[in-house]
Image (cartoon, rainbow, N blue to C red; front, side, top):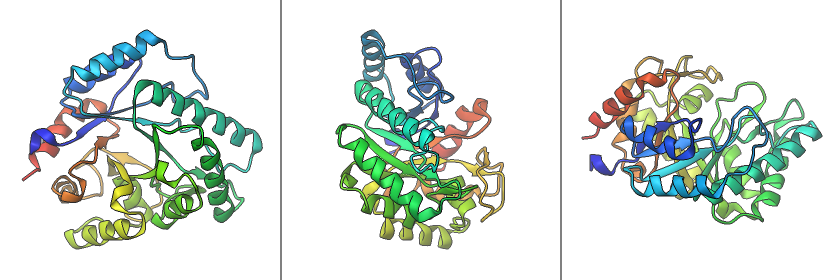
Length: 280
């Protein structure tokens, strides 16, 4: 069973897409997450046929069974600033195109922030833009990431993710990504077996298990309900280690890629070993 666990970390593409596969293998991953371009830029040069071929060949010959991409943090489909909204739409289209060329099935996206125009208006705008974008793409699905609710970010309630999906005609192309730090900070108690079970039951009831595409395994530097997005390494934050043990043994998540995004990347090999040891 341990061999079949989809577990890993976010790895760099700075040396090439194929080198990200090698890096993932080195640290013991069976699943990885990557950016398909610099996270600090809106756009990027086209991926060459050679890069695509090398990536696919490396993946085929590796122990990596799942690759998830993460969209740029610059993207805000719910922005009240029209220039940012326009750039976000174009940038997300570029990211989906890159994912489809690389054969990556899931692109994780932060839903957006309303910048004081109000959550409801923001949610409707996000849904409208996603619908328009996803009409053009069929292979890669968007996984809306749960947020901590910091600032004016939406997506800190399961109901908000559900609302975005329900407003989209392309809802079959939209799923969700749970981030443990974010939901804990947003006020979903996962600190005890009882509260963890209640939260997961709540997620399944509201969003649906079949719509869960990825899990980000992050501890939290800040307290429960802080509404702050501050990742900590596993066992170094406010979320009990027991919670991560519950996730690793939860049969609901046996086929879901679990990705570390913890701040001290040199700790990844140790954290992956720790999480694997938790599996009973």
